[in-house]
Length: 100
Image (tube, rainbow, N blue to C red; front, side, top):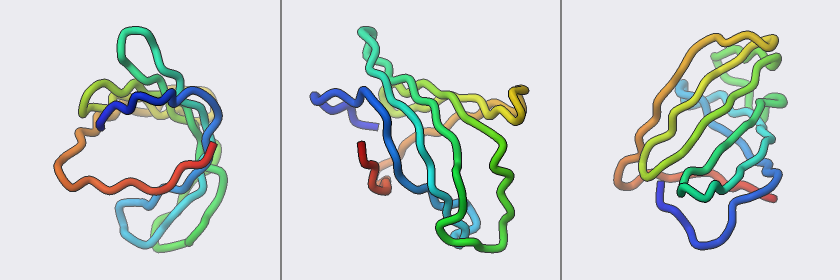
């Protein structure tokens, strides 16, 4: 993930397509620039934009840090840690719109 010179601080809204290629959810959360060059994210899925084959449980939340091309995070459900994840950006990665 390329780091931009402008601040990413504040509340954000957007949408996230799921891995099945059909389900898409609306998301809301925050992004905070840290002095060490890391961006700290927190977000939750709010509801379906497009309901595909995959069911989503909307009682979860996510927290992650982004540094260079890597996002490391944790998924929580009902306040309990469910799983950790790592995502690595690649050339040609396309992202959806975020509004703030």
